Length: 160
Image (cartoon, rainbow, N blue to C red; front, side):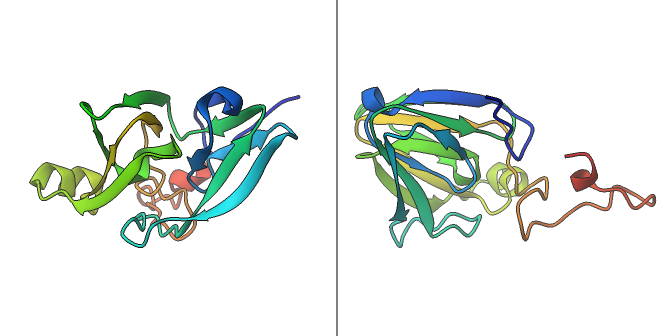
């Protein structure tokens, strides 16, 4: 079997049996085995992602799930002593049970480089998968602004 994601980037296999239930951003769940159960989960009202997603995909049960990312995928453990603060558009998935809080990062660098300057803080015990690129910045998600690429009419979407 061949898996092909929407965006150029990594695919990572996650053993849902070992990690426990996951919450996955829309578009990042590529495939899962038959014994992995899929559900639609609501984001907490304080955690509307700037990509406009109100719901996330829940994966639980037994077996493997395959996650895709835009760019490289990297993983971080979260502990009570080491919470994780991440630009929310770089978040791919996280283990159920982590506490999330959303806030505006007031730094000029964040606002200029990250768009809206919104970050999500993960706390508790768990795991987070993130992507190195932001699909919204490249205009590859429905509703994103596309660059015209100059005077020739080609844009980022012509190459992806």
